[in-house]
Length: 407
Image: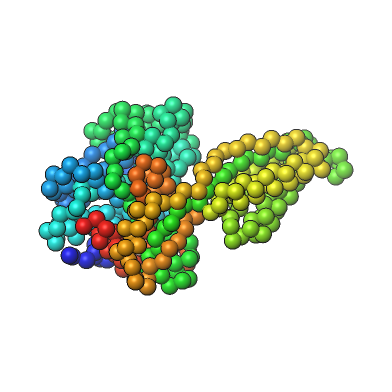
């Protein structure tokens, strides 16, 4: 069997990175010209490898390799094609390129796969267009209803999802027509992804077999006081919403540090109104995000944070509202899919079990098919930034493992 080529992997990743909406960056938003250019490139590559290519109603690209015309359900392999603003070349693209490399290895070896293989380039995983991630896989799996999807409008421009998806020029089905098509379709699904952390690099392992994805919980907490003149209002007469928010941010970090072996806590989205230098803030909002590998710990920590929020609101004479934004529980990957990976890596000292602390399309696909992931080390743990880097040899090693599973 031909072994995966680091050079081909490197070349394809670099080529995908060149499709960008901002010169000098890797910025590829779903439904933009850069997205369409990347889809066009991948379509050409898939066709050249003897694959039948289609796009679903949402904008996910699927290439099917089935030289024997098998009636068996396919194995799905892939990751997302979109990026964050000014992101890295490897996040998402790696998993698509690995899929292409596997097909090229099968072709060169003249070895048909045991089952059909479908390479998927998911759309809108990063959430850059609508503010919600993994929408392509949510559409495929039906995990989010059409009614919910149809409420989404783009952050910039306010265009409905249906309008943007319908504008793609690739001869696909109408948006909504094939919603949930992946239910019962795949025998298994595998995603290869950059780790986006330092665990593998620090441990010296080349590949991580991902056991599952952490639970993610977000609450939006809003403190409301009274805006007033920053110079004429005495300190004792203030109802400053930003003070309560600052206390809550510090308490969130303290709880996260206390439970650092179980969860991470972030206050990454903050809004202050009116956000003017000479006005006491009358309103302050913060989104608290907790991620953990145990649902009970996450829920318990959030209750402590909510309790603190109520205390600081009372102490500062403020009104408070607490609204849940999202909760996706811990998702453990399928034992059979994991066993297939462990079987072909038994005794390999460069492979180790690992847990994912970031969300992925694989977490959504796990609702409709036996699913597992492989991680490749991130240099210095960097991701979602231009400095993101993974060694092509390490990526080829992950491809080699996956190739052994599908043959």
